[in-house]
Length: 433
Image (cartoon, rainbow, N blue to C red; front, side, top):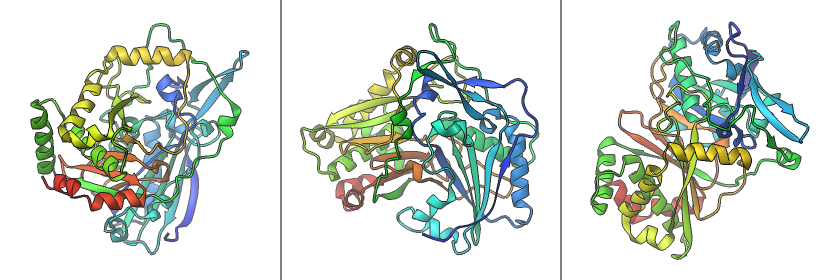
């Protein structure tokens, strides 16, 4: 791994503390992430022509952006109840976000974008590795690292996953880039009002076991990460094939692509044909819950499971798997999300880190996020990457491509599985449909 030298680290506060937003309660969608790690993503840019004042400019624009996003300058706070339950909320106290400045003096852009596999060097460009979201009571809820390369610059954010989901993460990133370009107002101001659901009273009380809080993070071991780029034309052909196989037009591009990887990964893990395989989807709630606007800031995601026996998954074709995904997504309506929230309040269940089952895949991110539109004033990014917190065997991350209409799919797998995929004639043929 290349040597990273840290130059400075400081706390950046909002320029003016918001009086309207002092406290924000956490919803079940927020609370269930307390025991897992921060969201980490960053963007690679060509180095600006006038880099001397860059760090000061980014710090100043970050401070101005935090004026609009007071939760990210705050800390988590707790209320201990007599019944041994705990409530969590965001104290918008302007304790500040962390800003680290580093340099990787021997790293070029080509060192990061040309290798087949994402180099481990990228992991060093992120802050707050191994920090659980519940530690946001004392740790910053947002940590930025700006790393200067020989010919580029990497800007990364690590944000508390009990405060943001992917949509809110990139909403903040988009807003910071606007402020950096000199905008005085945001094109999409965040909305912090929590959803009102019958019989749900804030703050929500949850029981917490100390052994879960103190549990160390699971170390995933030797894994490889590779990004597959799909051009718009290829995506259209793969989607058309999936729909044709099922005599429908309802299967989406994303559903077809996820099915392609679900099939290939399970085939190359050499699963028993009778073994159940699963793919866990992340369904956005903003698009399905009327009272949640697109600018809602917080977690608004729901997990859904699709399962097929390995034999059926592999033998019945791309369209069959895609249709199963389509039906699960279609059947998740507003009432499902409301019922989940009500159930969760009575039986809180927190995600925890640990090894993924060999018969399961986990999906993340979305091709809808505006990632490559983040121009800080010297041009669009040339690549995006995630930090070490996003590494687990079986994670499939979907993002928009550099060019409009393209999609990037990043897989994190054991070396054995990923090398088998690279030699899988069926998978390679599908890539070239």
